Length: 182
Length: 182
DNA sequence: TAGGCCATGTAACCGGTTACATGATTAG
DNA sequence: CTAATCATGTAACCGGTTACATGGCCTA
Image 1: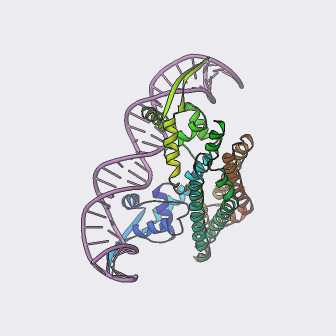
Image 2: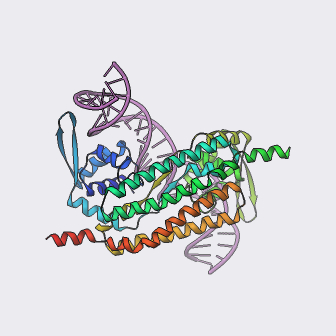
Image 3: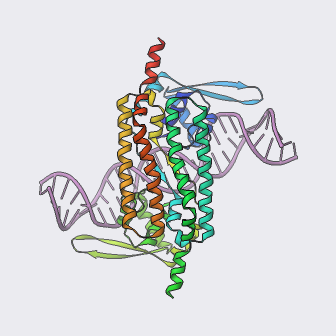
C-alpha cells in the first residue's frame, strides 16, 4: 500500500489537509494499520494534485496558519476504486519483540520483563484506540475492521498476560547452561 | 530490526550460508515475523565479516556450487546480545487488506470475496507453518513465540471465517445508496 | 530440453524517513 | 516564559528491493 493509495482512501472519507492526514494515520481511524510521515505526505499530495486526482483549496483560519484542504476528484475516486480491485498484498509484519523473545535465554530477566511489559502497555493502548474507533463510528465496514482488530489484539493481549511469567522464567537460561557445563 | 541484527540472530542459532539465511526468512523459523532479500543479505554478510562479527568459510559440495558458510564470532555474539538489551521497537504492521475491507462498500462482492478468501488461505498457510515450527523444535523460547503465533493467528482466522459473509454483504452498498438517492 | 533448485553477488533504483527551516498562537 | 499545537514544505540520506549476471546439476 503506497502513500498515494492511502491518501486517496483518507480523502475518500473526508476532505483533509496534509497535517490532518498525518493525524489520521498517527491517532485516528487508520492508525492501527498504517504509518506515514510529512516527508511523504506533502510531496505525494502535490503529485496527486498535478495528476488531478485531488484538488486543494486554501482555507484561512483565525489565529492559525492557513491550511490547504484537499478533496478527492471523480478521477481520483475512479483511480482509487481501480487500485482497490487488485488483490491486496499480504500484510507486512515485522516484530523486534518476537526476535527478542526468541532469544530470551540469552538475556537477563530484567531485559525480558521490560520488553514484555512495554509490549503489554502498547497493546493495551492499541486496544483502547481501536475500541474508541469502533464505538464512535457507525460506518459498517469500519465497524467490521475495528471488531476484527479488537478480536485479534484482544487475543494477543490475553496471551501476553497469561504467559508473561513463563517468558521471563526463560531469561538467562543459556548463561546458566554454560555455567553448568564448566 | 535491521538486517544486521537479524542475521546475527540466525547465525546465533546455527551456521548458515547467505542462501540458507534467505530460506530461514522465507520458509523457516523466522518467516512469520521478518522478510529480507538477497540484495541485503550478501552485502550485510560482507560488512559483518569485515567487522569481525562473523567469519565465513568455503565449503565445497559434490554436484553443487560451493557455499560460503558463516559462523558468529564471540565479538558478534556480544554485539548481538547488546542490541537485544535495548527495548524492542513497536511492531511494524501494514495491511492492504484492512484498507480494502474498510472500503468494502465501494467495491463489488466479487472483489471482496477474492480479497478475504485470499487472506483466509494465507492465514491458514501461516498457521500451518507456525504449527510445524512449534512441533519440530524443542527450544523453549521458540516454543513460546510459536505458541503465541498460533494463539493470535488462530484468533485471526476464526474471526475471518465467522465474519466472511458479513463483509461480503457490505460490498457495493455505497453504489446502491448513490442509486437510491437519484 | 525446459524449468526448477542450488548458489553468490552487484547496480540501479525507490519509497520512505529524519532532520531541518519557518512562524504564529495558545495553554500552562 | 516555555512548551505544545497548528501548519507546510524541502533536502539529504538510507535501508532495502528489483532485476540482472552467471552457471552447474537434477528432475519431469
